Length: 335
Image (cartoon, rainbow, N blue to C red; front, side, top):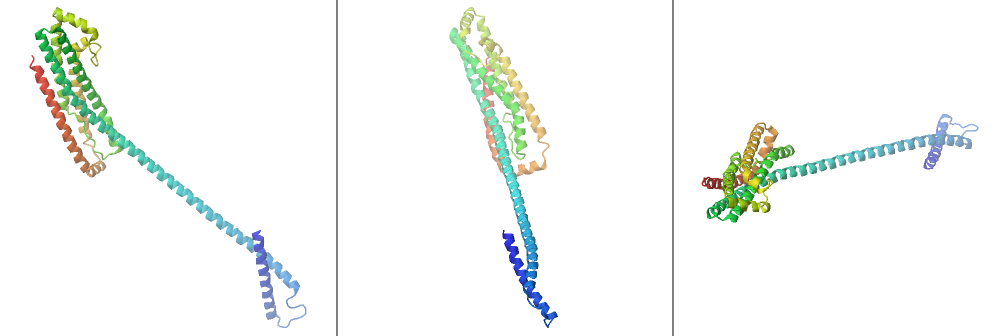
């Protein structure tokens, strides 16, 4: 509708314009008008019709051009909107990936820290376990000398329970040492510049856990000698069904008999596992990329803080090792 109206207007204008032009041209070409010359109605109709045709054609062309430009602008707007949506999607994906990676890195770091702290905590339990066991063995020796049958076996049972707890803790340290390389590798893969702490239990500390062996050996000898006495043996048989349960053993009798070999085996396994861990860490530290070195340099302040904490941990472990050695010497003095 708008196109037709526009074309009619253009046609009327063009018709009038053409009639005026024709009159001007006719007066110039033929200054003396003859019959039929001048601005006649017929000439007006003809020129108006011609102008209308020109207007229709021109209006249609102009309108088509305008629609084409509108479609072009709409297409550009659509493409721009799609491009913006694509950029927004990429940004959200990148941010989501960063959050996911950050969460994974935090989880990996926490796993390393938790296992490190657990290893220190478990190792710190060992001196108490061994001290209680040693005290109970000394109490059993005193009851044996005094001929106190039932208190003797009570002390034997208590010493066995504490040695069993000692062995469980050493085995837990073995498990932590086995887990640690994979946890540290996972953390480094997510954050190559991270300052990953070494496993806190050193080889010398791991070897020190064999301090329980002479205590357990003395316990076994003491119990065996008592069982050679008919009265002690009878009391033992009466207590077998009510004796305390030692972790890792089916009975108190099996615990008393095998604890020395068990704790010695656990200590040897821990020393071996920690030794392999230290060796693997030393080899891995020889091949460090420049990117990792640069990142490590940037994290120097954090490393210094970690070094300070590591020194505190080592002091605590060294104190625990000294206490273990005290109990070892205490047991060796019984021989």
